Length: 155
Length: 154
Image 1 (cartoon, chains in turn cyan, blue):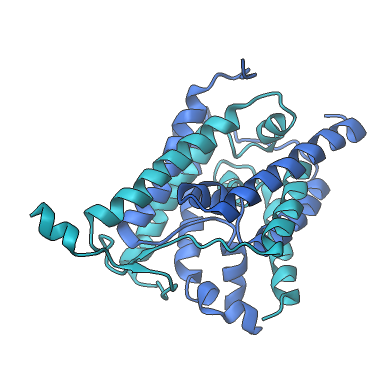
Image 2 (tube, each protein chain N blue to C red):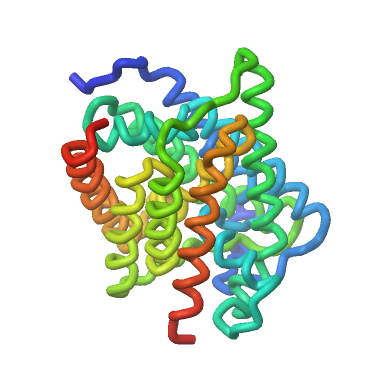
């Protein structure tokens, strides 16, 4: 069976389909919950800890990023080989970063903001779940920044 | 040796959970889940401008919002289990959170990725542009954090 399975290529899509079915939404909720639990457990929801990393006082963030990247790398490699399709249907997507000036300029601007606040997009939302209501100011700022980016982007 | 005043085990365990979340999303749905896109895709409910109505944003707004709601649910679960009753208070002033947030949102969306999009999903799929993005935002964040510490104190 292994040979017949490997002879059938996995369904990989480079386009982004509209995903709104309930099973997919529940899967996203569960996956987000694991993600958010991890952000809280690793104290990445605390901007003070992240700023400590950026000041070279505590290198723990490297363990967080490293572990997350390794697990993700394995999943992205293994899942399309073991499964022809995702469990709930559809197709395996690919992360498509493009090498443009905006990729680097945007990253530089993002880094300045991250260095000022110690807050990045995921932890800003997750921290609300641990009672850090101060982070609504960060979420509002990020959302407004994203609005300005979209409003000034060339379509 | 690396400076690790709080140890490393909870950092490693948390990182494994974060990776497991991204992996679960992928195995179940095939979706690649960074976190900055939700800040753009959610505007597609309100803003008619073509940029926000492009399929990559408007077509993903529902699951991205569910994914973001999951973040709150997961952190709340951690809080109930290990939070010792006290909420996690943030000592950074509101104007700093808001002003820095503007740059975070603008920059991450211009770059089309943040610490999770480029950092976890991009590096996890060995994307060179993502590696360059990560090195760039790490560099500017290191400089900014150390300069602001000198200016304002810690």
